[in-house]
Amino acid sequence: MHPQVDMYLKTAKRWRKELWKLRAIVLKAGLTEEWKWRAPCYTHQGSNVVILGDFKEFCTVSFFKGGLLKDPHNVLVKPGENTRAARMIRLTSVEEIEELEPIIIAYLHEAIAVEEAGLQVDFSKGREVEIPAELQTKFDEHPKFETAFDALTPGRQRAYLLHFSSAKQSQTRTTRIEKYIPRILNGKGINDCVCGHSKRMPACDGSHKSVR
Image 1 (tube, rainbow, N blue to C red):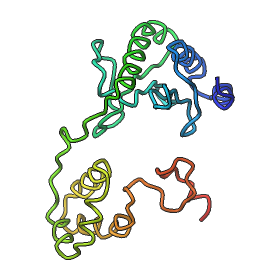
Image 2: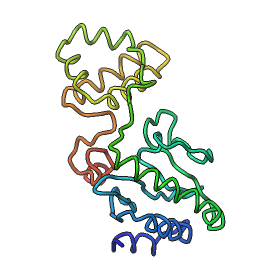
Image 3: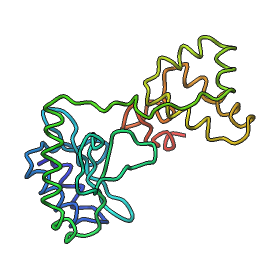
């Protein structure tokens, strides 16, 4: 057991009993406890398998490759509408966790088997997002910009495309694109840290606000 996880659980203001129970279940499955992204994270042979979460309305056990699990009990949900890989189980009481314990353990063993088999989430499925005309115009004007965009990971490309496309007005889409051109030219995703102060690299964790 990791000492930072001990401290986190002892000082948790919400879902303390529930998180302690989830921790015991996850450790029972034979996973290694680590402290990552300021949360209890559990790995198998160095690969991330699940992470515990503490939210306002529920606590969670999130599977990094939950999209590959069969989920015969239909308990897994996406953290976000456009989430590709992760799936979570949302919980609100110790009693609920105890009732679902056999299912959680079964899913943990399946997740471990996924890692041992070396399976990867296919991010190409359902990833097609139309390139806005305004973005194509910028590509035509600046070939280096298009090259930089193509060099981004599929996930980073998708995040930008969703952000640009969600604007209803053409001028708004153009403004958004122009705002992020420098970031894209530097190989950064829309949610990546650019100040160097984040403790959750490469993601931004808001640390830049404390140094302004």
